[in-house]
Amino acid sequence: MATVTVWNILNDHAGEVGDLLLGTCCAGCGGVGRGVCDTCASHFWAQPRQVATACGVPVFALAEYSAPLDQVLIAHKERANWQLATPLGARLAAAIQLLQADQQRIEVVPVPSSATAIRQRGYDHSHALARAAIRTIAPRFDNSLRVVRRLTRDSPVSDQSAMDRTDRWLNQSGTMRARAGAHPLVVIDDICTTGATLHEAVHRLQGAGCQVIGCAVLAHTPNSASPAVGPDGWR
Ligand SMILES: [Zn+2]
Image 1 (cartoon, rainbow, N blue to C red):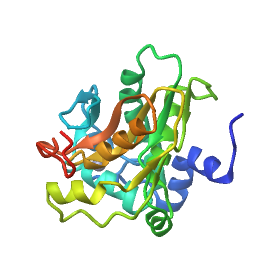
Image 2 (cartoon, protein in one colour):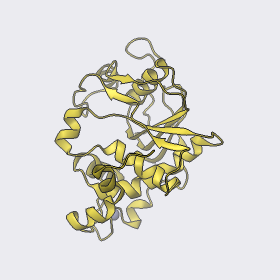
Image 3 (spheres, helix red, strand yellow):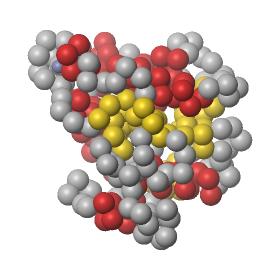
Image 4 (cartoon, protein in one colour):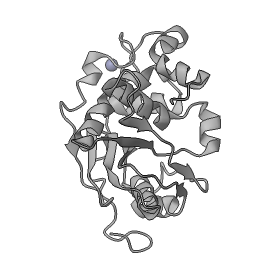
């Protein structure tokens, strides 16, 4: 049975709550528009594209991580702009459905933020994205698609915005812990920069015996393929 919490209800009505609290200007350009205006939204690709990473599973993205969408994703993640979860989750849904294909039942597993980051932001952005995505695919409760927190952060991650590729991989290595599950799953996140975070997630889930179909992200940084050899020899 689905668990209904105040938090989930707020997330499910993020657009309406966001309008009340934040008004209706576009997070990408500041112009008129609820959440993301049509001009900024046109920077999303029409279809998900598979991008090159060293995760060992297919990774699909919906856009290049560049202006103006970078401002949208920053507003959603760093400024807890709840109203963006619905339009962004709707975009992510296309990539999840592509990966789901003919699988009878899958889980959508958000990449976890640390408890400290969630507390500071007041918002769990990847979990909100996952829930918004499955609401797009199945507006009513559908047992074939569930958001499951199979990953937790085992240790904190340093701010990696200024780190180079190799340091990002070292920074992510060994930071997550996974819970085993019986159903195939898709890992989701907002951005893939070097692939280090997704690799850590996939690596831990597979180590726990999970079947990872692939990953879905909103945006990726061009040339985001990971180093030829990762910190502990991964390729
Ligand atoms: Zn805009």
